[in-house]
Length: 440
Image (cartoon, rainbow, N blue to C red; front, side, top):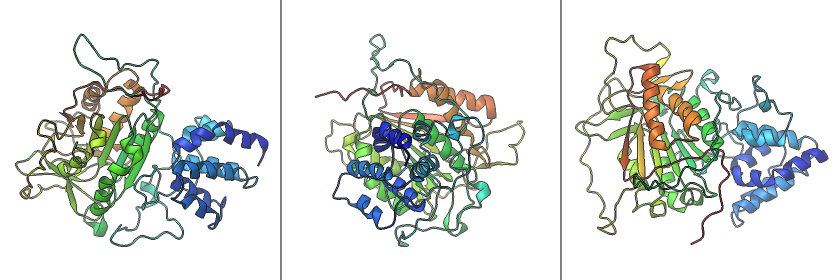
């Protein structure tokens, strides 16, 4: 490896360790021939801290020959770590506006509950049991986004903090200045076993845009693509021991799938990969103050990109264009079975739910639209509004602007939000360097 490349890795060493996913990078570098199968065993030693293993990984890359640096840059690009790839390589195509190269898409290690966003690819020597994950043939390449394609929008950066309490109104603000800025979790269901539902063309485009947006805002991003209900529940049950999540200053969760309204209820169901349904309320209960007390007082924002019924919202407006689909079925779902009684709070004086904001792509009973090329209407607008205004507006204002722009552009879809004890202002401060954690 040339000295200039070794210096580049050393200069960005801390960022590489802090911002990348170990399993994803090990898999990518192994597939590119940087490491042998025997060599990567050292990075799987769970007796050692994950940061220690990542430190060793990037130190070892510097000893792996003249092509290791370019392989590292390519691996970062394919995994969506565009900022790191740009920082490492001043000559990278990512600094230009031309179309990026078309590298092999990297895979997501499905067996890991916390991973970085990329495009599915098979990993040698890795197999899962049918109980853990059911998979089908992936969609044709024409429907998969290029993993290296950078979305064409700029994320405006904040120049100051806005999270001081507003004494005049009495409304406080969530603190988002600490080192652990935030985390985004994406549960995206685009394929369904045994053809129980049509593939959700364009939904992968949403993931690429969301990954880029939140990465630019300083968030850590994880993705759980096409999980069965059992695998989804397993991820949710493991949250209380996931240090990245429980130590975050802010949590965003996106659920994107086919959805269905429930008769005589504001609850909704969404479909998992294996065809089974999960209700949004059942999903949300894993984040309440009983099941996840570590996040009590921490802002949690949920975005549901699903249909909530079969009603359509246009009247005299012209029909959506042919590339548009909806994230639901043309029929109403069956009435919901009786719901179990809620768990008894550990303290009757304490709230079970708090600090939760829920953003729905549509109102109860109605469909939500998705373009097979550009992604869902709602996520398109969310990404554009957050990129343009998150540097100076709080999250409630952002979702207000989202609905305004949704109407201006598409006319026939109405979004809405719910606030469950979400009583403070939340600013995301993209671009500002997190301050040291407060003591005490």
